[in-house]
Length: 85
Image 1 (cartoon, rainbow, N blue to C red):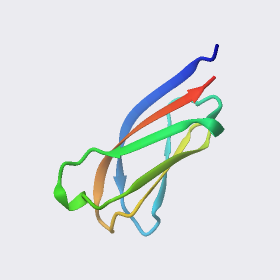
Image 2: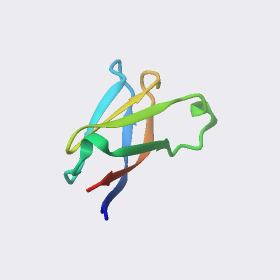
Image 3: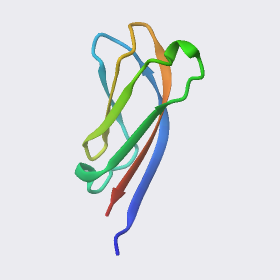
Image 4: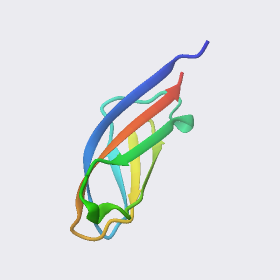
């Protein structure tokens, strides 16, 4: 049988001219190359209804998030990582 690592949290995503931002996780994710990552916007404000986000692990403790936010917009993003170990 396989075990699973389930890791979740949230962070502030501040838009900039660089659409990809990297966030350091507090723990290493084993088998990070095959981890499933889900991210979602936690804001209720309707002005963010057309915004998209995608996330992936770029190494064992770095989560990279990409968005189409405009400059000077900051939102809270929640993430869930599931990895088989």
